[in-house]
Image 1 (spheres, rainbow, N blue to C red):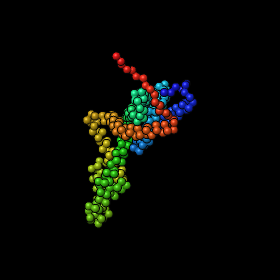
Image 2 (tube, rainbow, N blue to C red):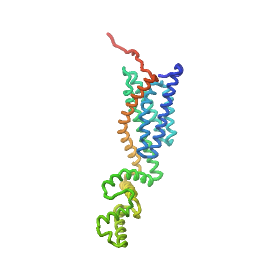
Image 3 (cartoon, rainbow, N blue to C red):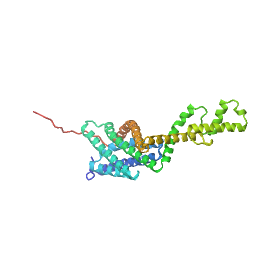
Length: 321
């Protein structure tokens, strides 16, 4: 463990480099996580996941290399830096506590592994450190999701349902294209109806323009009534599906409210629990990837003589009669 008052300059330099990479990795993770939460797109989470896979071995190495006081000061500063990336409210303060708890618990787990195992095994240390870091990170993200969803609903409830409907629509459009003959996202509703009429009624093309227009209007009106939306016929089919999904979501919320169930109040909790469950599944693979990275990282640091693994004698108590 490090004591800067007695260390030679070479070790101070190495510890400074490690501290910079450790802090930089976590600050980047905070920044990209906040961006991913704001954007709400799945692809935006690829960078935070990659950074987390790297941050876990760096945390384990820092817990091994730094002394308790230095590690405490460094992780306390990183934990409060969390407030600079997320909205400074109660949930951000909760995030600070969770992140600091994860850092400090990781330190004790790393030290326990060092003092209770005969052979140094990076994967074992990273597995124990990673489990607590992942738990703290998942809880922090879940509370942030809760805070953002609750804020979005309070500030713009219709806009929230619109964004939710847009996300659902993106997921079901490919399924609808495969299940509904002639469905194309960019095709207008009127053209889709006309194509259906031409296919189902062979003499439709022989009708006068006035009769075809009346047939089109009647079909559009019937479809609009059955879907429960107002359309002009010029909307692309993707927009029609979006309107249907948004209307169904609003009806679902209204039905729950009529039954005395405050779904609007429960939605943030449902969202956060869903995110936590998804992250719990992903954490298994993130943990495996972090262990693989740690084996390579410790091998590289040992090969470049950044770290050394020494063999020492350990004194143990024995009972004799």
